[in-house]
Length: 452
Ligand code: DLL
Image (cartoon, rainbow, N blue to C red; front, side, top):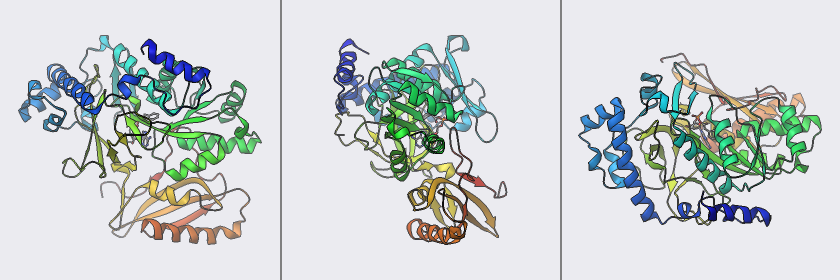
């Protein structure tokens, strides 16, 4: 960060200002879009060149498609490039897509899927520095200021959440508490004792923290907490409202994935009108997941990301499987980088129930905020005859009488039918019956026969 931007962050902090327009790297974050596109084109050409030169899989595919790095002249030329899939990483486990020899790397992370080998990602020292700067940018956009105590409850380890948030918070001048997930009672004591102003956690774990605090009689509403950077799993606006009712926090959405970098690929600013995708380092596209064709701006589709500066693991048109919409319309914060609207869910998590597409987050939006229902739920999917069927397992708030469960279940089924358009069974359970997460919540239990 240049001296001038450091001074900007510092002055906002010392004035105790709530200024909506504080940047980490003002010139880049507010760069005119034509200039941004020119920078992207130049970086894209370089990335394609490195991928072609150093990664056999990319070279084979680029050659087969007849694309040479010199053919890349504008950002639109990205459409000539072949897609990269998660299975490509698995098929070339562990290091087959790396563009640098292992000895030139500074760090490895990995994410374990539900099946098969983990996906391994690598970073050079420069990659780690870029990641820290983009996370720092995200922290500042979200409302974190120098000197804030950042309580980091993202898991440390192979998961990118913990270390990604850690380095970013340090980079922008915050004081990090490297808590990781779990030990919820201790988390609460330290949030109170250390005066944390910023909480980093999955949204489901933030709620679990609030719930345990209530049970312990600790009033987190009187804590110094003010900002939450929540991500790593889909969550609804209803969940945001619920978290903000239980914690004295402005809940901000942060997005990322290990294959592209980790947290900090995109983050909401204080306007909270979509997540700014950091376009000087990534090229974002939204495509029709079936045809692969670009969808018009503002239309829903699958997010595809090309890295523009990654050294160790350049990614060409990575199919994220995340469904969203984007807008390049100006944001009130002054940042020019496009905004990704809330991720509705992963393509893989979409259920097709008697012909109707259903994401768990749609059920969440109906469930959360219903009277007498707690914000914890799971969807159980099974097959009845040739049809898929969903049972919603929901949980009541403490103090609800057991004889009311049936009436509550009928009311929930009715709301889901009228708002989402599918018939479900609803099973209402007593408080605490739905498992709580310390990281990414498990929202779907799929009992359908495999391969069918
Ligand atoms: O979850 C990185 C991360 C850590 C992001 C902490 C934000 C905060 P992975 O484990 O590789 O990386 O999982 C990436 O999680 O493709 C999405 O499906 C989902 N995801 C991440 N952030 C969000 C979000 C991290 N804000 C996968 N909203 C992604 C919805 C999200 N889904």
